Length: 155
Image (cartoon, rainbow, N blue to C red; front, side, top):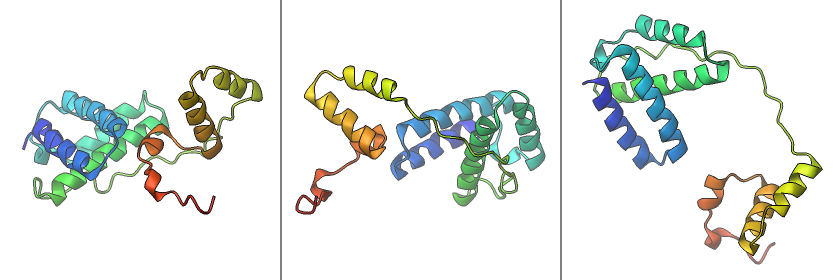
């Protein structure tokens, strides 16, 4: 099976599994880069050494976090291909992610928070901002909320 076909099937499976559109978009870019580097070869023809060389070359211009993202994609698509029976052996199984230091979270200043509040005009915008700010929820998490799961009697 060619890399492009493997990506097509993998993407369909992951969409069904509920991967977010942002994750699929990021993985789509990684698949294009992988296909661009190796051409549209048979996925089963790639070896661990070839993948490691590709990642080593990538590490020359990527931050550790970006390289880790690329590695996660490669490990995921090859694991999936192996589990689905498209390849007899997973060449990415022993590839490790780079160690990353802990990131220090960035906090908004009181002034920045006030600017964001002032940019909200409608009651809906104001409510969404206050909800996001007070809970730390992301947009995708808010969209997936079900109001029927809220315990209105114990608030």
